[in-house]
Image (cartoon, rainbow, N blue to C red; front, side, top):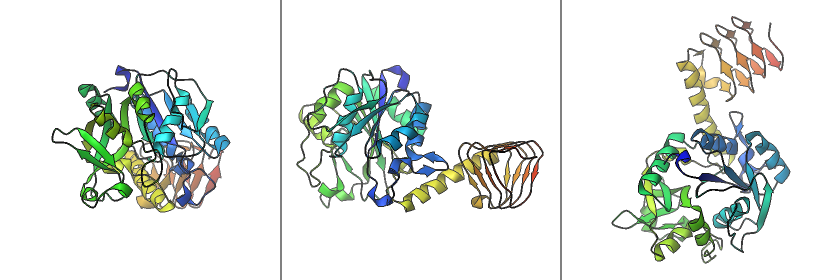
Length: 345
């Protein structure tokens, strides 16, 4: 399903505390190659044509909303008590017109336009490796099936920690079982919930209104909506991808570093394909907003930051740090140079 083929909006869940990050900075604002992880999610959604986005935030509201101003237009709602993923999505209802918000939802509208849509795509703000092509394929599947409710599942070689997808003989979703509630047999299933859900908005909020906290965590599980729908005779479709890496989340600094390494490798490879040479490539740190001209050579242990622009046929020496600078064509920058917000000569 192409985003533009029906009224589709996205809900980005960005209210998690991120306790294991051990940081005063909200988890979704931690940067990878210069871009906050929630910003990467929003940019990916924009790239597939989804412009109407409601982000559910919590905690450091001024800090979160200040950062998210860079991704306008955006609607922000607040989840005040963090009573689970179901309640988080319910709190998104404060940002939509003609939506009945479940009474257990503790939150409110914060900023932005109230959105109108027929369907919503739900994803997490702490999955910065989201792949645009995978999301496009899932949406195309949803349109071909005319899905009222669908989940993007992933085949994962190490499923521990993920909700397991239970299907019937026809491939329809029976339920999603969270690991803490799963039996030993269910834990052996390698088809897992990616956290990405497509739903008809009216149906979604009707199902959310029926959630309870009868589970191990005593929370409102978004995934319980699927079992409720099945009991009511409402089919839920499942689309499975092998690209499980696209849904890797970030819960601690180690996972943040691992994901950043993957993103940096992609950035460097992109510039190599455009005619840039790197010496000891893995030692170079390059943020997303940097531009490098063809036939330029980047020495080892360089940091290229912010909106730095490097012209064609430049030579950047080793151990150079450039931030928000313009390097004209043919410039040779000596090893050890540190420059910020000036033009090299």
